[in-house]
Image 1: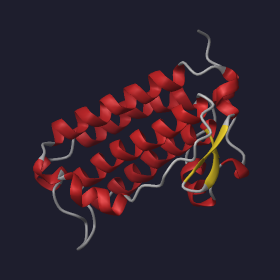
Image 2: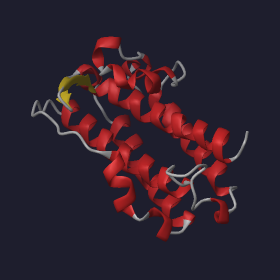
Image 3: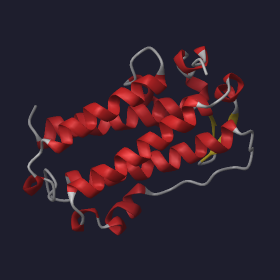
Image 4: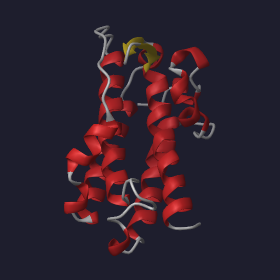
Length: 178
């Protein structure tokens, strides 16, 4: 199957809630699915190089650990990917919000190994890429409602990619001083 050109058209400002604009802006021009595929290698390489002893505390009191962030990225990608699937399949049922600030402490990331968390993140991303890779062209522009706001399947793909870029930037700047 030849990739659809729809994968290269960034979402318009009205295709997603303003709160996601920063994530969307982080995604480079081009095929968002290819970006996500490439991003996986970059993310795993960066995080596998971090000494595991530095991954269980936040950079400041009350801040998430690297392990918390990794599991948060996987959890958020699952939610956004599910939303994209539902919307791409023309399901117009409104989709509920989720509270990452409640989920993260309940997830127990610091009790798990980095290898386990990275394996979960990798499996999640591969699943997302496989789903998006198979979308027909018309599915990308389908719209639905999530968290009470209008959103398109296309926007969700950009949000997923940008969300990961956002958190990698935080890890580099605040945890790794790069």
